[in-house]
Length: 322
Figure 1: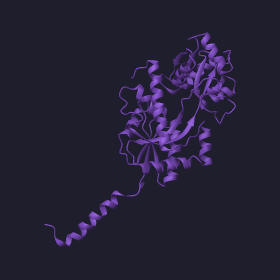
Figure 2: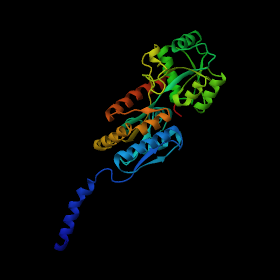
Figure 3: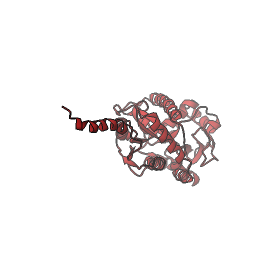
Figure 4: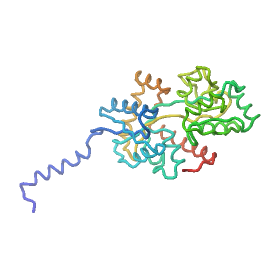
């Protein structure tokens, strides 16, 4: 039996319950998972994202590296986390578009199992050839490839990665036939291009620009739809007559499916505000990237469109999930 003297305390507890449920967000530390090891480009991007969120939200956002299995371990962990806004991640085409197609059991679907919060930074790749190849622009490359089907070898950082898919997309859009040579990373592929063992790479601007400016390889174009602000002297592939050639490179912030819209809106605003700051723009440029702001709806639409394109590209290669 409830004694009368206990009723005020019970009533106070009941009244407090809704208040606790409505505690303002964020009220504690937020984790930002990077599904790759410390020190790489993805880790740098994740730490810049954490900085923007910390400054914009007023709570500490800490980076947690959960690497392994091509990024699927950390990504699956986030997909299975509570959608309360306290666990988010640094997302990329590799983790959310490539890996779900290349692993039999990645533990997640890269778009439908996540909340799209904000795109953050974008990069570009460059189409680079060995200086001994008698081509100086994309039209000449296409003509040479059509005259020598299958004889041009292009290197990549591994089967199924972005610079492999850039080559597949190039072949589809130009009707050419190139031979793919996968390496264990982009650096050995570039070394073999310099040595003349392969003729072509589609590699990141930050990875190749030093060798381009040193005259060790020849850059024909950037792969973005528009000219790259850090190297505007290089035309795009599309400018040189190849329609619909664009496979965006980006890093972004994503979280588990079901994060409430007000939380998503606040995180998106924090990221976009951070991308306006000169110090952030400078740090992105130092790593070969540029700000890539968006609304949550715009970023979600990009992810859906890119999923369809990646599915088409991987299917055309005949690659089987491992």
